[in-house]
Amino acid sequence: MVGNPVPRSPLAADATQLEAGPSGWDELALPPNFQGQSSVRSLGTSVTMQTQSHVYLWSAITRAWTIVPVAPGAQVIQFNAFVLVVDGTTLHGYATRTGKLETLTLAAVPTLHHASVSSCWMALAEVGTDLWAFGAFDGTWHHQTLALPGPEVVVGQTVAMVRDGGDIYGVSANVGDFVPGPSLQAGSSVRANGDVGIAWDSQQVVGFSAHLNRWASQSLPAAQLLSHQRGYAMFEGAGDLWAYSPCTGDFVSVQPPAGYQLDAGRYVALVESGGPDVVAYSSGQNRFVARTLQSAPQVDVNDEVLLVQDSTGVLGFSVVRGEFSQLLPGTYSTNTNAAMVWAENGAQGFALNLVEGTWSDPLVLTSQSQRQVLRNVVVVADTAGYQALSGRHGKWHSQACQTSFQFLAPTSGDVFVALDGVRSYLFDPVLDRWSGTVHGPAWTDHDVWRQTIVAFDGRALQGFGLMNNVWSSRAIRGNFVGLDANSSCGYALTDTHLYTYSAHGSLSTFSRFPEFSRLQPIAAPLHLLQTAPAGSQVFVTMGLRPTFQLYASLGMLFVDPTSVVRRFPMGTVPADGWIDFVLPLGAASALRGRPLHIQTLVIEPSGRAWLGNSVAPILL
Image 1 (cartoon, rainbow, N blue to C red):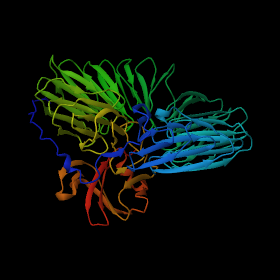
Image 2: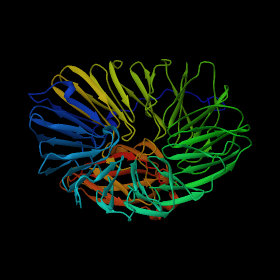
Image 3: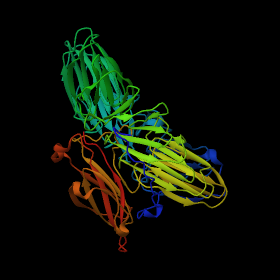
Image 4: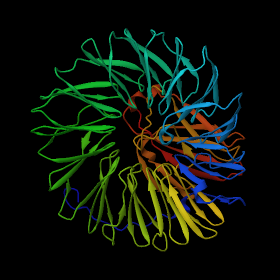
């Protein structure tokens, strides 16, 4: 109920045959020397399988297998969007974005440098005075000859910093080149985290942006590092706070209140004074915003949002807006999760629209209400069904269910699925709608992680991803063994076949905010990657609002035609089956802080035409 009750109409299940483009599922017959389910792994955008003689690599972006002959002792290191295969002195790099294998034949077994495999988009290989960098988005080995062996190498999620004697280099996973940095004094400090590389000595601080592939410097004697997050670095110097953001590639400063304390999230921060004065920081806008409250506040700082509550009410602040919301008056219990802010007073609940910076209409709560606060979604359940809200759109949507309180809602992601016998209803925060499927018997197995769900109903597989927008089903061959979901992919295994699932669809970008981590700055070009049969013609539509309309035989239209801001040809798909279109965003400054909904039309050489999935990066 939103203010007054909203009718809960049963939702007709979306027909899976509406996938006019490629299905979400692919199939591979198991090799004769298959090593069992433990040899199969899904992570990020790849599925790997290893036997004694080969490594099998599948990309959720290109939807193709690459098979690599290896020795029995070869090591497979799987990351979010690339895979390294170390086979003695041979080093293979496989990027899911390109679907290609790039191989180095080295003089010795390399020393590898990378961040945590579950949160890393680049790696470096070192042999003597030679250093190579491999980025998930670039997909190519880049070489740098060093002055001395044994360099200092630090790797974040999408950025690396290399100090080679007196020289310093920054490397971006988006580009891959070794970019020389400013000169620093001996004994300078070097760090890498997220999209931010930083270094400093007694006189200056320098920052390197993975988004922009460039350096910036700031004279700041005796600087002290306060926090180094995925989305910014914060220093104190000369009585001021200085922030470096990779979104804008420069430094900004503010004079903090006396006796301040810094509360740091991944992309936002709050400076507290112990009194009514606070200063919020957005790395997306690279901006400090000061506010004087009515009293010393209670504070909650999360990844992309924060809130402060004083004696008069609650204020929200998001990385997208870079400014405080209007006041929600009253006293509330609150909850945040990544990019979601939720506040309730026992009778009513409110959620923050992180794009507009406004509070939702009130949702009436009862003693039976169950709240699920996900990373950018909040769902309230009662005996009649569910009310869901996306932090991108800020409106409540109702879904009736006959089966009460049976749902899947891991707080590590944004997938919420209500289970209703032979029907399942998923709330899609990108298209701002409930999406349903009929799956025969109830699911006998399922898994949810981040953006993706895969399930099995005893006869067929089901899958849904927040990037491909529709349910996908696939009948299986053989006897079902098990399944697994990860951020943007998944798999299901039978005793005869391996079925892989892509949550991405045929169109993808570097960015996925706020569906976890990567941002799309206005200052950086937007990459659109389309996979399709070679020779296909691809056309792009961009709009400001989503929709869900059957468009003749082409499939589903996901961009509201009344909101279209631009249409243009992407080009012809080359022989390798994918096209990477780079779109500068400098002229789109009026859209800063807005989601841009993008969909492609593909016309194959045969004349068959279809609409692909949509992507909706928020421009920062």
